[in-house]
Structure formats: C-alpha cells, structure tokens
Amino acid sequence: TFTEPVSGLDVSDFVCGSGSLSAPTSNADRTVWTSTFTPTLNANDATNTIELKLTGVTDDIPNPGVG
Image (cartoon, rainbow, N blue to C red):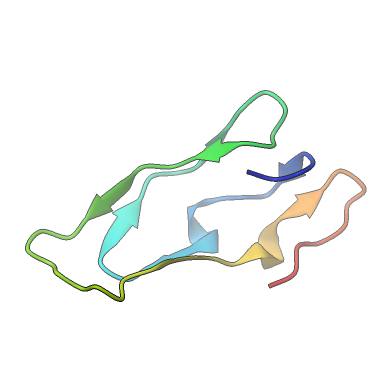
C-alpha cells in the first residue's frame, strides 16, 4: 500500500528467498498493489523475507522511489 499513486512496480522489483511472486496488480487508484506468493515446495526457512526495491517505482510527478 502506498500513500499516493505509483507506476513502474513489477515483479522484478521484488526479491524472494524461497518462492516466487505473480506480477503485481493495482487498484484503480494505483495505491494498493497485490501479488500472490508461491512458496518453494519443502522449503523451511524462518528467516525468509520478501524485499521490495523501490528504485523502479515513481509517483505521478515523477519522483523516483528510494530504497
């Protein structure tokens, strides 16, 4: 969820340790984005994370994402 509309968010902006994400889709306002995580079978990792890299994302001005 973003506080303002964003563009440029795609699956390459995410890093997943044990699994994959579907292409993210947004609501009409481009503030809420949804993706489905599919875990790797038989993977058990308590430290597994999903990381979002914001460098490819921009708002409507367009200000680039940071981090």
